Image 1 (tube, rainbow, N blue to C red):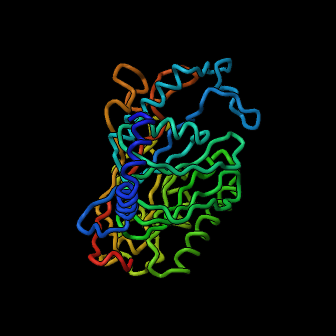
Image 2: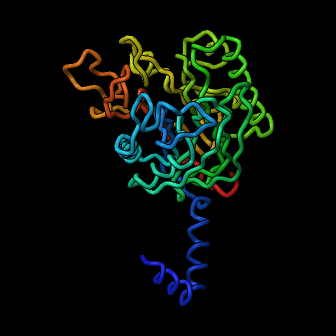
Image 3: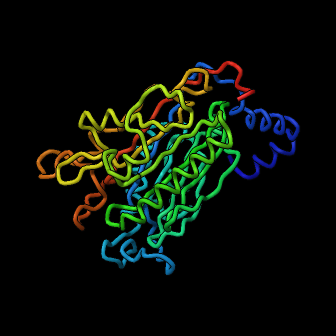
Length: 337
């Protein structure tokens, strides 16, 4: 639609347009009991633009850099990720390893699914941030802020209404195993402390923690802080990992030395595991499609198909696979949630 047509529409239909926008704005808060909603997380692995930034270490991802990161390669990366985003078609999708708002915007514009987004710049030396994509008719953000993590990548906290039910979403990208154990422990403690503060301030809080924890569920630091399996939680403050059973069955979101690992997690607060909480856990999974994996005929067959593998350009997607959960909207009186 041209600018002239937009102007004519607003001039001749101003009152109708205001009513229409008001109706659209209130859709997420309307009762949506009986629906199923999906949330997920995807580490998109180094989604950098091609523009040098002297404030971060992005030299490899420039046309003159080691990886010869040019417009063609960037455009292909965006198109690849947009395909995954569309095939997932979740109501809320958290992203890790995005360089800036510009790349998030390019991804949203390339996707066929109609997404809004939230992005915040982190204090990370590599210049990688977190973002949240969401469907505006399913999720309405109410509060957004960064939370100190004890190292460069803060946690992204978003409170909002998902299908009319208030949720507290915490997105994280924790330090890798290459970092000192003390740093990793401190970051996990900060995460647990923040989640605990949410649950202490509101006994009815519905907390969802999504992120790349850079550790399997059996990592000692993880075992000390998070329960491993799914169970109906009498204690609403408890966090449950529905993906744990998938990992025990040999599934994973990452592959290292031919071993499938579950580095990407979704933890649900106890109120999401019990009936009567407005939203209730239904199912979960690791999103796998043939196009996301290295094809047959190569030694790394079955690994996630990366953009670069050992410095070789493969033109793929990411070294991680997306993870997701589905929740049922079970409350009939959502206006009170």
